[in-house]
View 1 (cartoon, rainbow, N blue to C red):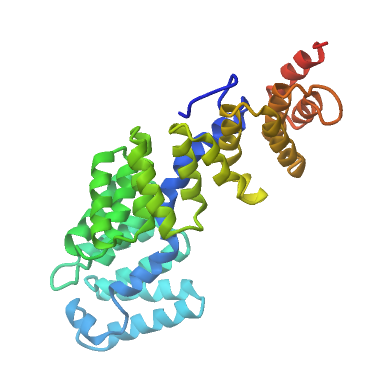
View 2: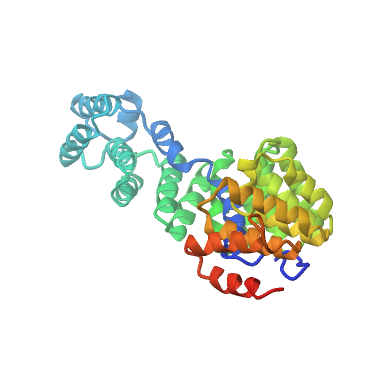
Amino acid sequence: MEASNMGKSEGSSGSAGSGRRSMSAIVVAGLAIAAGVVLTLVLREALKPGDANAAGANGSASGNVADQALNAADTYIKQGEPGKAEVILRKALETYPEDQRMYVMLAEVLIGQHRLQDAYDQLEKAIACPPPATHEASIEFTAGNVASMMGNAERATMHYAAAQSQDKTDARYPLYLAQTLIKQNKIDDAKTNLLIVLNLDPDNAIAWGTLAELEYRGGQFGLASQHVARARTLDPQSLVWRILEARIGVRQNKAEEALSLLTALSEAQQREPGVLDLMGQCYGLLRRPVEAAGLYSKHSLADPTNAPLALEAAVWLEKAGKIKGNDGAIAFAKRAMMLGDDHAKAIVERLEKLP
């Protein structure tokens, strides 16, 4: 991790470690692009209920019964009555077990109810429908999203790869594929797919930022710096890319520049996971413990029930030489102890023995 100074790079409490672990997760999470939100939209793209052309393409009955069932279910979905839609679709599938549109719409209903395994099963049935069913990339993509939400990275990878194979023009597919490959620590394959994204969509900030994160992990700080700069240019409001740029700056011995990126944040943003830890590290590298102590004290007072933050303030106050008094290290360590921090008692006892 980042270089250390003044004893410990980012303080000593559990909050610091938690923050460090959180940062990579935050960056990778930027890839998700609100997958749950887009699921039903993608399903709607896949096969529109009641579309006569879709009906013919999917081999459903030439009569209007299947379309009527789909339209009735669609109406109930729009009215906020998914249970009735589900009943209609399951009953209709008894008669039309190869109508792909019904599986797709039923999956939509189930996703809305967070019944992910059942939804995934319906999507697999939709994909398995025999010709002339339309095995559209969007159905594979949605199945990949559901598998990812279920925590099954291998199945998600399979579906995203299938979507990409069927439609090589949509940048979402290699982007999401890269995400799930990262989860499996297949970094080279993830980079390859991110480059595919950028070939299709050169202004994709998420792809640039994620490449930056991967280069940072691999110790390629110069490349990481270039990529994150591009991401920030494309998405200047992103907190994730700002923090990543600061982390890269620290590894390039540019603590002052990194700190300036973080001090410009609002107090609420500074309390996002990992940000205070990184600011503390910068102050440590710059040998400015008094400012770090002031930073942590301020945030601890603003979040008085946060035990790890109170303990972190105590650590920095001790480094700054401010031990006693209502705003000293002992006071903050005692508050952390009362809030249940397991490490605080030993620190209080040690500090109280100091002259």
